[in-house]
Length: 118
Ligand SMILES: [Zn+2]
Image (cartoon, rainbow, N blue to C red; front, side, top):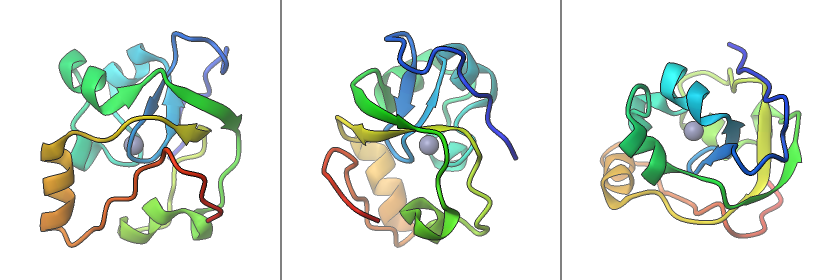
C-alpha cells in the first residue's frame, strides 16, 4: 500500500497522524483515512476524528521510513508500513478513547512528541 505523497510537505495545511506520524492533506485523511492505523483511528469520512487524531503541529519531514524500525509496524500484523511522508516529531497526544483502544489490544502508546531514535 502506498500513501499519497503530499505536494507541499511543509505546508501548514497538511496534518500528521498522532499515532504513526504519517503526513497527509486533510482531504486525503478524509478520503482514505490513515494508511497505517485507520483500524484504530477511524479517520475516514470524519472531520471530527481528523481534528482530534491528527495535528498541524509537526516538525521535520522524512520521506522514507524503515518498517523494521517503526514501532507502529510492531503492532501491525504486517510490516507493510505505507510509503509516504512522515513527520520526525509530532506534538500532541492521541485522544483517550484511542489510547484505551490500544490498551485493549495490549499496545503501549508512546507519544510522538519526544525525540526517539527507533
Ligand atoms: Zn496513523
